[in-house]
Structure formats: C-alpha cells, structure tokens
Length: 129
Image 1: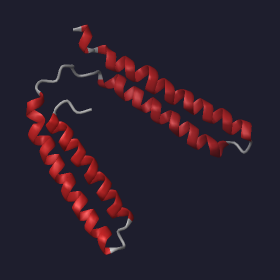
Image 2: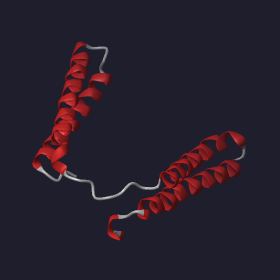
Image 3: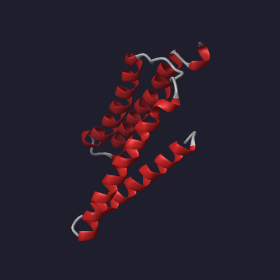
C-alpha cells in the first residue's frame, strides 16, 4: 500500500518492470523477448532509483528492532515444517504414512508462522512503548 503519490507511482513502475522482465524471460529466444527483458530491467532500475530517492521523505521508523533469536526460531520452524512435509513423502510408501508426515510438517510450519513469529514481533511492539 502506497502512502504517497510518489510511492504509488514508483510501485506501479516497479510492477510494470517485473511484468515486462518476466515476459522477456519467458520469450527470451525471440528478439522481442530479449528487448522486453532489457527494457524491463531498465524500468526496474529506474523504479529502484525512485524508491531510494523518496526513502528519506518517509521519516523515522516507529518500531524498535525485534529479537533476532525469536525471529530466527520462527523462520526455522516454518522451514523445518516444510522440510518434514517434503521429505516425509519419501519416508513412507503408504498413503496414511505420507498423510501423517505431511500433517506434522504443516503443524510445525503453522506453529512457527503463527506462534513464534508473532511473539517476536509483539515483543517490542509500537503500542507497548
């Protein structure tokens, strides 16, 4: 969500650049695909320049740093849940075994994303100061 017109314009330019770059990658074997890739990268560079130009206008960030250990624990739990779900498929040949490992992986991922990460974010929340 853009707060100012310049942020909105630069975000729109960024999205245009991403779209044109993706189209250029998809059709790279053609001449117009190469042209789209180069044009999209130029538009992305311009949008990044605009982002950096308007960054000082945003002012001071209101929140303090969050505890790194809790953030890391949440991200690792989310990744571990994904790994359990993916690698658990190779551990069992039965459907019920695969279902159990997938559900355990989803539960671990959700615990990391819905329990550990919010706790880390709420530790130094803006409304607590």
